[in-house]
Amino acid sequence: LPDVQVEGKHIGSCLGDLYSVTWMEDTDNQSPAAASETIETQTERVTRLVTKSHVQVFGDTTISSELITNFEGDTDSAGQLDTSLAPMIARAAPQRDAAIRSNEAALASAYFRFTEMGSAAAGEELVALVQARLSTRKTFEAVAQRLGLNGGIEALPPRAHGAQHVDCHYDVHKAYKSACGELHPEALSFSATMADLCAHQGGSPDAIVKAISAVCAA
Figure 1: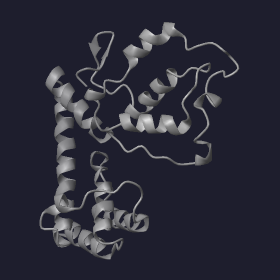
Figure 2 (figure 1 turned 60 degrees about the horizontal axis):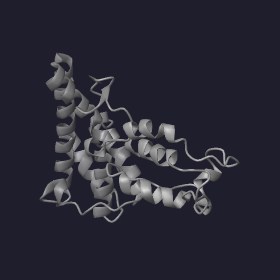
Figure 3 (figure 1 turned 30 degrees about the vertical axis):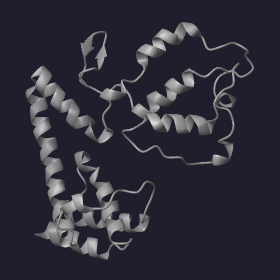
Figure 4 (figure 1 turned 60 degrees about the vertical axis):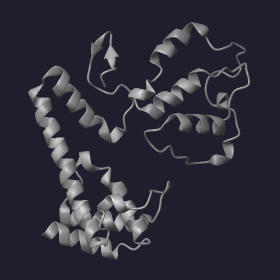
């Protein structure tokens, strides 16, 4: 956020999603006249550059070998990429070192506005966001303890990519919403913790649901 400026003015906000900006930047650099990359190649390239979220592939994958210029731009034209746009594209390139995870955006924005702009409202917002996250973490730590994880949620095994135990995750989310209330927007990342707990329980929601009910009823 400190690096985000518009006409030299810090605005304290994210200007774009890293995946979307990276994908558009890669697309801008394709030429309809030269050998373009395929959908599969672009997916692999952009996925390597996006480190703050998990890029997912879905839909009709049978077209993955086709050139992206078959779908974007004027493929009837023999013109090269307009080089006059290169400086603008370079300036617009995402500063990946400054990128943050999407679930950290609100917290980072409030922190920046409080520390750099002295906004009292941002300070109150920051405190509320931190308290919401810590409160939810405390709940899941207690749930993990009841499931025999003495190290709490930190003791859960490394997360596997892709959908795992979807039915269990759904049942656990319903149980949490019923017993504890809906997840605070600042605590949505704990939905992944629900998935981790389901993996720990081999896809069975029963013990997790029981633990959630006991913790939130206490």
